[in-house]
Image 1: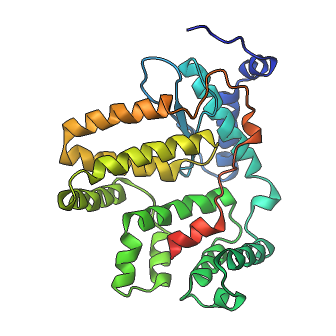
Image 2: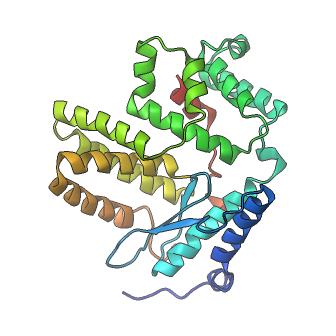
Image 3: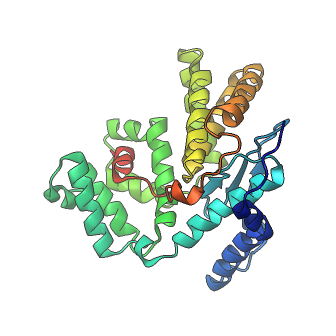
Length: 296
């Protein structure tokens, strides 16, 4: 394969120790927050591949995840590019406009009302989606949008998994569900419970897991190429893979290879692309509509 010469921007980028800069950024934040543990603050995960393009994910303290944006010919380049995307988002997250304030809540609720064709009176009613959204924002006043997205990821997964629907059918109050899960972290126990739910669905509808896993691979690849925060998509893939490993280990191996092919050669990452990721990165916070859907 003929390699494409690096542009001046690429050469300048390689001269920067962006991996070290990202670690230093979060190390300083941990020290300021009186968190003395500074090892393994930032975790990198390289996707096994026999050749380019190489893919790398980086997970930040709190769980937010980003991936490399560019077509990378080496694992080192993929690692650096993932660190660059994460550093841009981490820095952007520190701006005053990215912190939840009363003014921000008022604007967000107003936008949500317009998006859902609702009315402002719903904001004071916790029995409505608008009211729940307003309650979520108010309970997280003072936090950054990245911190809020980390909490919302839990509810997005609960919505995707059908857990919220089950709670609604059992007539559990939204306030109780929000209060409980706002304090819960995504851990192996939560992933295992969701995987068991999907395993049960696979037994009722054989082939469902393979179909959902391929969709998850595609969504993850598209989100990475858009420069978006990836944890929701990556967690879906991990949960479905866990379920499929219990249902059919052989099929999981086959689907994993298909997924790798899509991630690396899905037509989303064009070889030699000179696109600047700052022109396309959607800085991690999703639109109000998708959040409301999760809380519905």
